[in-house]
Length: 191
Image (cartoon, rainbow, N blue to C red; front, side, top):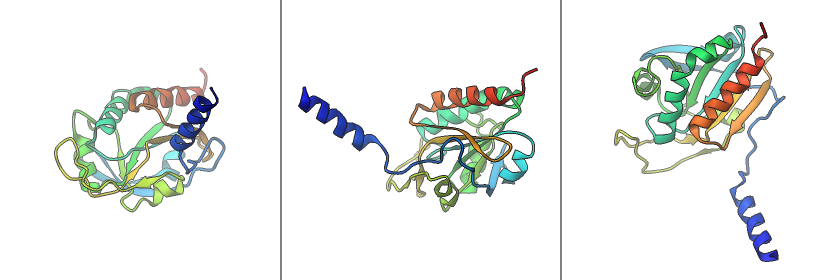
């Protein structure tokens, strides 16, 4: 029994990340980034978005990869629910803006509804204390080699005062979206 408990403790220690994403109550780092929506490039400003209401900043590893495709699609089909709760949603990855223009317009994933921002140098992800790793030789679902680093899949719900209300990570992509929607709906004014 002792060996089993020791083994479980070692296993859980190995699976726990050495980094610590920003958590509830922390101040969200503001950022500006080149972004894309429906294939068109624009400048996303977290500060400007927060002036309108809460913002969901979700980090994902790479456009056109299995889990990211699921997550982008799930966000896009739920975008009206996020808007009804008064929230803006933006995806952030280390993809180039050109990859994101394609991804943002792809009817299977972002479907022209979900803006995605480029953090090509990883500075935004690192400001949110996210782990950024390189996986050489990876290919996306289109067969194209991925040459950029990956940020860990983590979502932050940021309130209008710039504080993080929720940090959601370590769950499946579609569950991440569902938990995020629940968190945003809790922030919505009661009518």
